[in-house]
Image (cartoon, rainbow, N blue to C red; front, side, top):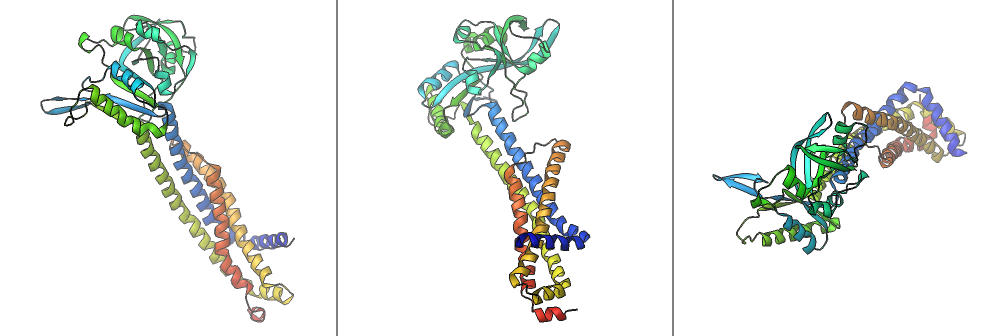
Length: 410
């Protein structure tokens, strides 16, 4: 009952000066809203990174072929063929912790079905590809080891290719032509979306590696076993670094490289790249939250200032209450509740502002935002803490006024 009565008195006092109370709450409203909006931007970036990791595949290592040198100029990784299908098989069988490893080749070709055509990426790979990439099938099946050994003319389509060739029709069992070679569509991949570098992962046709070499991409007898990249799925994130080093050691041994020779390949740990991006995202979130928290601090100072003014204006009222029996803790509670009420009302309005601001940012800036219950709770809790912290000094000052001096105050 005491608390409810104090809240009623506090609300009555705040209604007396509505404009002043509103302006006092403005700092808290802006502060809470800014914290929620800025943290939602950072959280949205972190969530986007997690989506990218999931879309590419978890626990993934990529082995790229070496760099060619011509006239003293190094041409960059992938400019010469140094990886073979046998390298991929050796990695899969000889290194503990490797779930699957698959060599693949990639090119671009025109796909034709009826009177429709589409230029897309052709991925020649092995049956383990879906396991490595954590990719599901929406319909049909993936090709098997028998298809790979027999260089069967079968294809699995990405969603973008399916939409452009078949629209809403069924693609399974249809015959498409890749460089005038007929292929039977046996499967349809689940949608993946864009990769971290903006590539449409669904704009692809996957065929057996042997078929790609013999029928589509073309290879000579001299490089019949070479592949463009080897993708490796590791059993656990904790094993990535160890497996990466073992892959380097194994390939150096297989390629007969001397200790003084550089690697003729490059092993990339995508987890390290995404970890760096995630760390940058967390740092950005903390920075944005810290900047926005300054507004909360300013709002708290505003509450302290206006409460000190209120104590001065109501000195005679405080004296009268003490004269009729109010204790110091009653006066302290009354003014403290007023300060906290200001902060909490401002916090509630700030939450609405923050949610609305996050939505506007997502719409206008095309930026992914994510509002978490934790950020809302922290922002609202901070508002309550500020009300108590900055309201305590004015409340303490009012509670320990001399009743006689307070009654004589004009």
